[in-house]
Image (cartoon, one colour):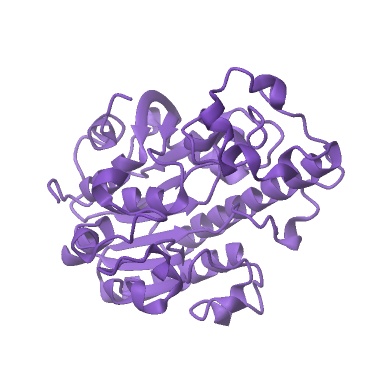
Length: 368
């Protein structure tokens, strides 16, 4: 895949010169959201009005790929701008070494005067010890490298109360997705008091397994029946190499194909989790307006990989087929002239582009 740096593309989609004051930057990451599970990517069976609006007001990238379709590896790539072989971080490979995390976008932004915060699923360990599973230990998470930390252990939980840094939001928002948007407001208020530009990263658990959506949104898809994709099922897997059918991406996650009832229940819950992220995006954008910072706050929304959802009879991810590796990418810069908004770009972009793009928006031209 030809490597096209998103950090070069942004020159053509933003104002010709940056504002004198550095922009605030919000990076929002859903978990396992394939791009076709998003309304603005052509799916009329999902309800994602805030993502769709963000695309209409910003730039939608039609061919955005995750270079490794596995949560841990993809997150290390996003943080560092390094391919997996260089970052060295994945299950059974090892954690992200401290030396490499020191060159990650949140660390560099903080060094350059940004007020930084993280909430949600960090999903990897930052450690010089060899065990990649240490992301289940608090001492292997980079808590002190952020001004405000609200991340959780391991895969995290949909129950807000199970993250000790988020527990205070649990009574009003028992499901973590909306709770992260509530945390975002407190973070922005706190950041404004410092007088610094802020960089806020939220990594939602949704729509990762287990598919436990926020009951607050039960009404959204009530009574709905979903169509299967055209490449669904075993009949569309006959051309796939035998090796591709040996791993969990093919043998596991059978709920996508056990029965019609199982598929309908699974896709409903998956889409409802995504709707929760969409709602949280709406909460965040409303909050930015209320706090008076919307006009100088860039929003980047993407995902770390996607479920195959039964395409080619696959349920999981791992292999770089379209549904597993392709995710939505939307960038909104309020400083962009009106006539340059609502653009759809066909260039290939990837998760390796996230760190350099974020840093370039902050005026940091070189890193690493």
